[in-house]
Image 1 (tube, rainbow, N blue to C red):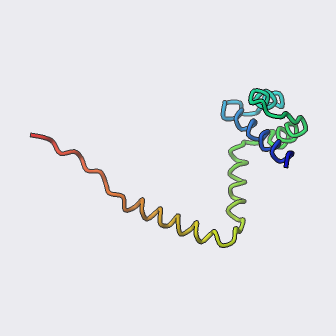
Image 2 (image 1 turned 90 degrees about the vertical axis):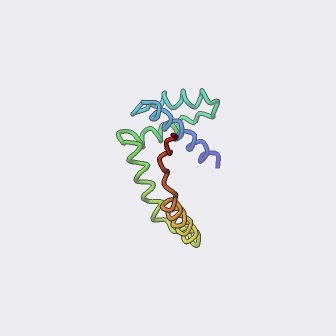
Image 3 (image 1 turned 180 degrees about the horizontal axis):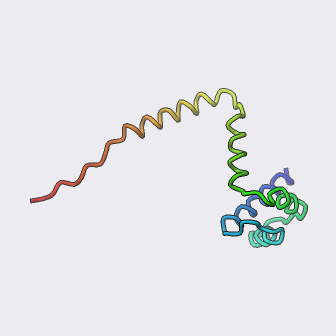
Length: 105
């Protein structure tokens, strides 16, 4: 569990660097973010994350991962999620249109 949590913090720090405008964060950039958050710094996890994402757009990586999640069967919850989405879509379509305010005389 600890390694998983440590790796997730490292990925989050990498993404924060990207959101901050650094398209290719270095290991030192990720380390500084983790240290600023008083998080445990695992040099091995940082090295792994930076090397795996080096030369890749994190947005493309996230899109690829989201596509894989769609293919994962989650059992009975798909029907409920689809039903909720369908209901939400119908509700959005039925929303009343705003009318222009009437001018006072």
